[in-house]
Structures are given as C-alpha cells and as structure tokens.
Image (tube, rainbow, N blue to C red):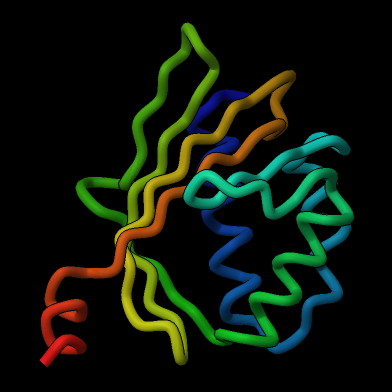
Length: 133
C-alpha cells in the first residue's frame, strides 16, 4: 500500500473514532492499519506500546473528549517521504472540552502498515491568548 493511502486510511479511521457512537469497528479496522507492535509518541511521551495499548488510549480519549473533528491543512494536509517511508499529516483538531489544536503526525510505515506514530499538539494561539486574559 502506498504511503499516501496508509496515511489517508489512518486519518479517516481517527475521524470515524471521533465521530461514531459505536466503537465496535476499531479492532478490525486497526489491524489493517497498524503493526501489532505499533508505538505512539505524543509530545515526546510514549502513550501506547502495542496495538492493544493504542486502542485503549483511543477509547480513553473517547471517554474524555468525544466527539472530535479534524480539518486537513493545505490541500490534503499530507506529505510523504518515500525514502524514509514516512507520511506526515497536518490538521486542525477540535475536541469537546479540549479546544482546538494544530496537530502534526509523522507516521512510519513498514510493509504497508503504521509501525510508529509521532504526534505534536499545539494549542491554537488565539485560544492561548483568550485563556490568559
């Protein structure tokens, strides 16, 4: 599977997780997208080590900030590095009780599946300014 296809599948999966009342699809779809040993690093901290841990972190996010939505930045919010097998997603994330963030994710892809996720969340400057008043 091409890097762009893997990244798009991941983005659509997260959108579905953030919008759907039912999460019964998560295991079957996740097994098509991620390696069993997938690791997720958020702002420098490992938050998931393995597919089960990743799904648990998504379920925890659903409990805390459901629903959420995202809007790709630029044409599709995606660029790929075929030499390093990395796809980068950039988007704006809005979540209940959390606010709006600019998000960048680097997805390391091995054999058509995501093996590593490196995420950086930045609170939007307008929200930071309004919260400090």
